[in-house]
Image 1: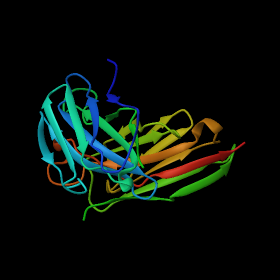
Image 2: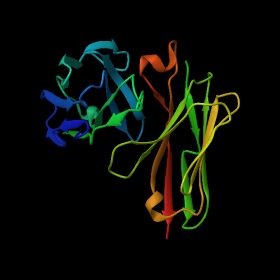
Image 3: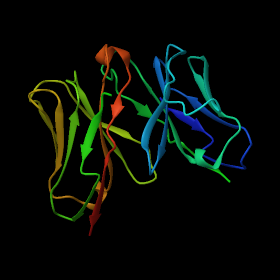
Image 4: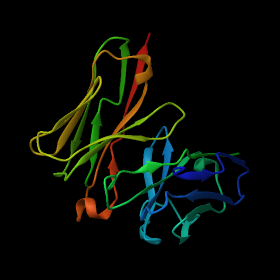
Length: 116
Length: 115
């Protein structure tokens, strides 16, 4: 398996623009997580899905953030409108609740977002 | 709220020195996991501990899970420059434990190694 795939790897945008981050989880994984990482706040869980259903979005900073998982092989995280304080590295991770790798989270390479 | 705390936040060592990071949970954990993130990289799973008092080794790395299953440690013997990075512990906090998939990560310990 290719692992968790995120795109784009880097995104530079201007304040007020819409940003869409994409994630393809590992095939067969039933959990998908979106994290944000900054020096100040560390690794923060934004939202996670189980079998494509959002379970907990309490980490989403505000209404400007939204995430969807229309099917088992794709999720996106949108920020609209973006603000400079949204600049961070956004990670997607997936895991399975069965088998030898049960509950181990596999992270994508991340998207480094810069909002100017 | 339920938390996973790690200390120290930063550790600078000379190559060849030992390094230890500690992880404490506010609640009993069914298991604890450790991840490593290289500079500019993403967190990568290292190991999972499940049993009370469990000790596991990976070459120069020794992982321990406390008897009460509320604390854990990672010890690196004779650090090398390849050990540089941030080490995170993570545990399944909240009702349901491991069956819910979610992990709560500690804030991480940033290790730098001077050659």
